[in-house]
Image (cartoon, rainbow, N blue to C red; front, side, top):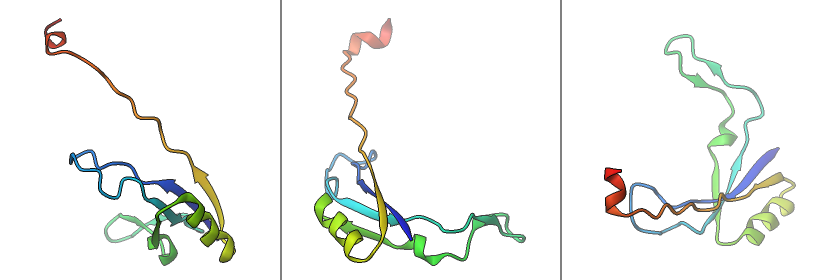
Length: 92
């Protein structure tokens, strides 16, 4: 059973930072997804990938994975990019 651990990013549609620092453990699919013959939507029979666990720290997420024998890899967070621009730059 494989999983990935990553830090949840801030919601781009809101200005708040609630739950932005949480660490998330998501299970990866063991089998490839296949299209449904009726609707054409991609899906599978693996319900384990629907499980999402949140932790306050990276160490807590790692400890949970080790305690339960889950092979987890850590996905590093992308560095935030600040684009400083003045209003006059819109007219250049």
